[in-house]
Amino acid sequence: MVFVISKLFTYLLLPPGIFIIILIIAGIYAKKLKWLFYISALTLYLLSNKFFANILLYPLEHNYYKDKITPKAVVVLGGAVNPKDVLRSYPETFKREIYGVLLAKKYNLPFVYTGGGMKIKEADYVKKDVMLIKEICNCKIKDFYEKNSLDTYQNAKFTAKLFKKLKLKKEIFLVTSAYHMKRAIKLFKHFDFKIIPKPVGFFYKPYYTYWDIFPNENNFHKSYRAIHEYLGLLSLKLRGIK
Image (cartoon, rainbow, N blue to C red; front, side):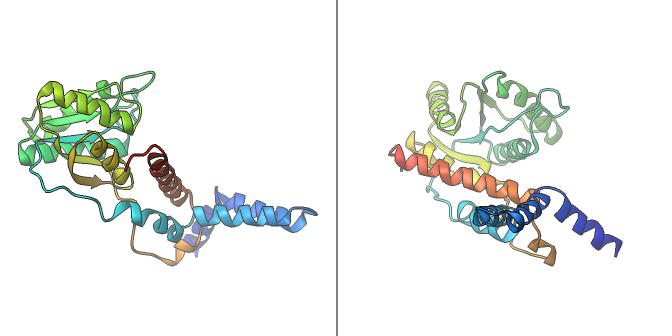
């Protein structure tokens, strides 16, 4: 019983659940624009619901394009870092790095990390984490860092320049988060890379419990990521990138 009460408290009295309740109450007492409050509550509920988040995520995290190649390098897309943390890379970024290093070791390939930043150079901090991963797994691989890019388009553009400098053939394992992979593939292919996708960090979860009818911030975060990707894919179409 205590467990059930604790769960209900978490889902209904913490965001986003509490805001859904507030919007419904506001709709009940509002004299005008009731429909706006109800639509807002419904939208927030759907975005915070696992069923809806999975519907958004599934097309992004499945059925990737794959070239028939023998990759010549592993390319890992950057994420976020916190220079003050013991491990500078955010968990999502760190997972990409670990997978990238392990792939590079397994196939005896160079490891290439791409990620810059406006105020700090992300790759400078990531390099320290990668050194630690290499030491732990005894990975004697070559690693290279592109540190001027600010977005995925520049990741692809500047990585292409780095490959030219290193005289590497643009045939790669591409490592990034599963939800982000389709957009990354389109952009790297735009710069003439051939790719075998190696997604990591899947958000889509194909199992459910009765608690999944309730909204929570984790599902809202997943929906936000998915919608951001759909907008990113739309922007590529508008720019003529197939």
